[in-house]
Length: 271
Image 1 (cartoon, rainbow, N blue to C red):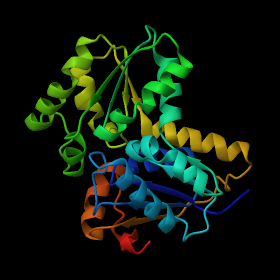
Image 2: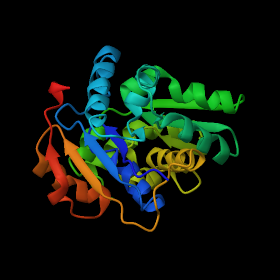
Image 3: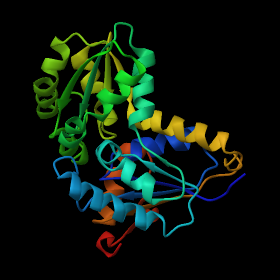
Image 4: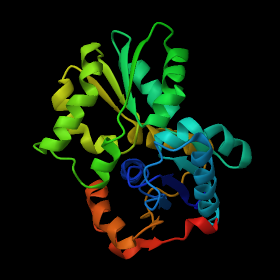
């Protein structure tokens, strides 16, 4: 048993989709979450900038005595994962491998789509991971840079004409390719699950990267005998690099609960 917290970070709010699943799967675990809301989105940045930001995010989280870190950010997972793992002496998990495994298991035809930020799609990391598991996979990848700002602005519900139009524009080529499985390669995207599912159709399986990352974290900690007492109530702390009030107001959309008394602002540039 290990009562140290799990650190989780994302470029903004999207990583809270992973936190929500971790709370469901691991109710006894303490979690420290950092959202770099002052610099979101990461997806259009250079690889060098993403690595620099990710190092600062990890440095802040490591000011706590953690037992593991979950990179709940597709952009960082595809761009800075190897760097971060090489520089840190504790388990670091990303979203790519768990989502790739889920997609390879779910597909019936081998025809798989991947959507993500520009940096994620540019990296080719999902395609590489899926192809290693399923050599005959046919992959269609599409960058969707406007989806993160829409989610951060709370534009996630069915009937939002702007969001539905953007989803249609981005996913038309993916749908035309006839995919039967679609990896939501950014942890913001599960908030758009209903809109994306409506457009793609019920025959397409959507892979929630946040949920798969949470499952991977649970499995790893169980294997390492590092799970906390599941009968206790885990403590969750939330930090943001921009307004704590704005973070708390939007977090309710992701977590389904009010966390306004548990959010603090951190000057991430100091790390």
